[in-house]
Length: 371
Ligand code: KG4
Ligand code: ZN
Image 1 (spheres, rainbow, N blue to C red):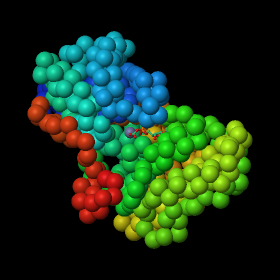
Image 2: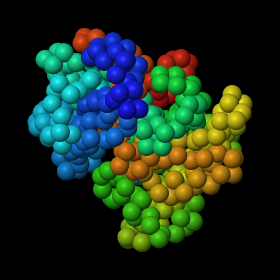
Image 3: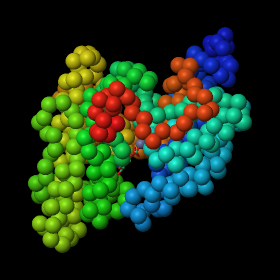
Image 4: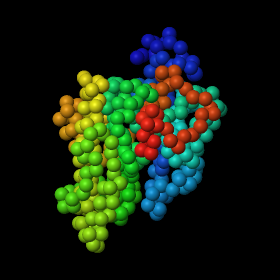
């Protein structure tokens, strides 16, 4: 859309925003261990994309320490926003909205980002859009691949493992979820058991490369069962048993165990996804897009296997580039933009949320399972 074509449309800073061209949104993400800031415009151009990882600060503890994360966000967020605005070559007056993760996540970190976003919004009279971090992951494929609604979404991250029908912005129907650990959590805990380091997913993937994935016989929890729920805690326990049985492991043993674990995950996820495709087609018989999102979607073995699963069911797999699968602020700016152009903004007293399911009804119905 050219500038002249949109000239007759309202261009106010607040309220409904019915055009998508020339709209600049600043995105802020602080819900876990990445401090991230991005600027995205309504044409889907990424004008700035900065991610400051805290991996080195948390590595000595083998996992993310919430207090360290929150303090580190405080130290780094301000200068990172300054740099993002410089890279985007924009002034505050060029922005149309501020999008910020308001949950779910480590609430101390979420509060840091949300307070900063509220301060900017108040000081520069900009609309605020409070974004669900999971919706950020869920809508990324629309930015990267222009995917249309509806689609089937496999959301696999450090805190979540779900299959959902995505009917529109804010319209999610959860088909299945994990009854215990999230899949990223399983990667992280297994990496810790194997002494492979932190974060676990990339470490397991690296160790598994070229190793024998058939050497250790590990369970495939839920495989072959109806529905598309997941379970991973038994798999992690089986890895521990295998280690105890095997005795002291050398690097080759560790690599084979990592590969066997990764293969068990791949088999489980593809089995559950095949069931979800059938459930999706019962609702949307002709829709054909399977989107995979979240940090674990960066795993190449899993992407390859999902590609085959999609093809076998006449679906097309869309997987955003790994950098936009793991946590980032581009997805927050984009999800904010999607909501903003539907006229949705949030008040400055909106609270941070530790839990915030995409499908609240399904989450309430399965209290105890992860949202
Ligand atoms: O989406 P994300 O960056 O943060 C959350 O919202 O949780 O996901 C982080 C998770 C971690 O558990 C990490 O180990 C996992 O994604 N992960 C991977 C890979 N890269 C990141 N898991 C498997 N293979 C990978 N290559
Ligand atoms: Zn995430």
